[in-house]
Length: 360
Image 1 (cartoon, one colour):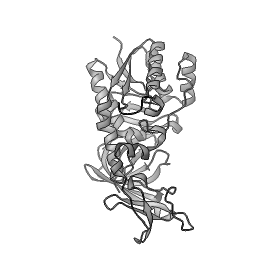
Image 2: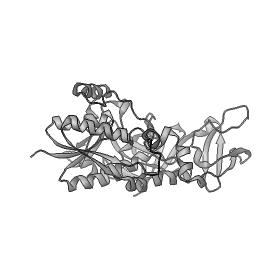
Image 3: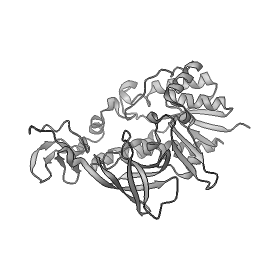
Image 4: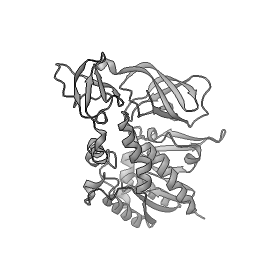
């Protein structure tokens, strides 16, 4: 009997080809799109949610499923998405930190509730179009997460929270392909998503305007307050801490004759702290909610390459576990704009050691 795998289909080319590859391998594939947009948004799809969450995306996924000859379902996961992703996203900005909503979407929804549903359908795994690779270490029995073969498209920094149980049931069929190879495969099959543009924005934030999204959701979040320098001198006013992130230069509206950057956010005091570019340099950070994939939490300091944002080039560092939830990372060289709320992911070569959420 063929292995049954549920594929999360976003309506893009990557998840379309992920489904196609599994069909070609002889799997019993079931396509699923998670319906996560809220009823309160405008009726027009392009103004309701981003391109990977609207009705057009669901239509594209349905067309692909029909072309592949697989079953397809649209699941209403609006409530779960709001509780697990959108609510914490808004709360993070309220606290003055910059979140990565894809983390909760992957761990809580795609490889959380969707995996539980898949097992109820007698499926053994959930597959997505992520660029990553999972392999089981035959010696230790651990499921290891590795970078994608296409380094430019690697998405392991969005997958570090996955547990061993989740990784055991995760499939990333496009992880061994380059983006060009994925598109070419879709063209050969005549899939409608073959040349579809990539979605770069946060899927539930229209036009990539997170400030506008937050103002509509929680207008009281944006309270004005002072912009101060590192000595506490007031330089101006801002329209709400939630509208800023560490390293930001634009939108400060300070006519001081030189460029200044956001170097700290104090949500309790509604204060934005600014400084020069050199003030963004830090040589260490503390991470919480840590998860180790490649090994148990190391008892001794470990040398790693640490990545602090999606487009950051991993930097040499020493990792030290503080407790079950916390780790400290000390970089060999100072890094620019280490931002609370973002992920820090630890690598050794192609292997993902683990990661955490930057606390300070």
